[in-house]
Length: 421
Ligand code: HEM
Image (cartoon, rainbow, N blue to C red; front, side):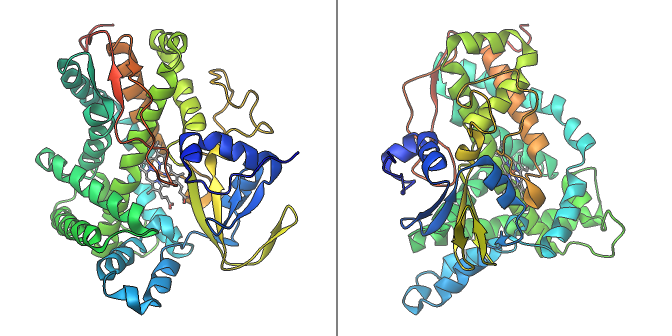
């Protein structure tokens, strides 16, 4: 018998356990039309992977939202700030299609060269040790997100863009403001929230403009200078100042909250089983596969949205131009057709085939950096905070797109110094 299908992904049950909701859909209606979300929900691994590569599905998803809002004159005045915000975001690489995307990706790819990222490893270890020192000084209890998982990625991105250390705190504030806008973008965000965010983001744009002007004059070894250089494939184009400002904002936005949640979700998953936690703590070689399993089982991104630009068929359903498709990553990442023992942490899987970083032309450009940060943070936390465990069952934030929590209260048995093996 078909159970009741979980049509609404924002109910308290679906928010607490998105994996079970996705599992029911995957088994009984893998191409499900949700009247609640007015979108198709895809949950099978093969369908999600194919969707990432399907040109009938567009990533250009902010512009249609702007047009829809512009057609609502009664909302237009109060939504002025949000329209201006959306206009800024609509230029980001992640919400563009080729050929605009191809050009932006080529330039940003130059900044994410493997050697540049690998060279950051030692620095990231030093940063993590500093944050864990301060966290340990606070006693055997604390919020791991506020203490470690939240500040780390903002500092790393600020440094990689070549911003002076004194400006780090401003990156954290801007990142909060970007999140305010992004979370409110599709919903009923209030105008004053957008006004506040917009003021912050205008300040951020001004800051990046100054940084860009300085780097144009005096290029360095940072990512911003790399993105400024000409087309790495020999083409004639350069990124304009506006495009560079957009790229800096996107890197901060795309790389901050995701990495925070990757660290927090991994600690949540791995410490839930003390035997597993201690096994990973005692064998550093197990940290990378443990992080991959955490990304698969508890990935920071739950839903990615695409707009249909061409009618097509999928499993007997007709998906029409103008409709939306939601890719449910928790469905794909626990698909039993793809993964043996899909709901278990298995540290011996041969290759991480999960889709936590997406696939195709938009596949996460920061995946290598995110993996390094998450591995170092998780390995160091387990090693230096013996007996680490989550205090209670912190609620997840009521958002569709990400598997996130506001705070992660933890307890441990007393911190060890950084040099302790
Ligand atoms: C564990 C942490 C992270 C996760 C789970 C993650 C996940 C993803 C996913 C699923 C996408 C594809 C989006 C789509 O197809 O619409 C993506 C794209 C992207 N990510 Fe990440 N990300 C992480 C960290 C980072 C970091 C650290 C950075 C940079 C500092 C970054 C920068 C980007 C950018 C710029 C894109 C857009 C790429 C494009 O459109 O071509 N991400 N990420």
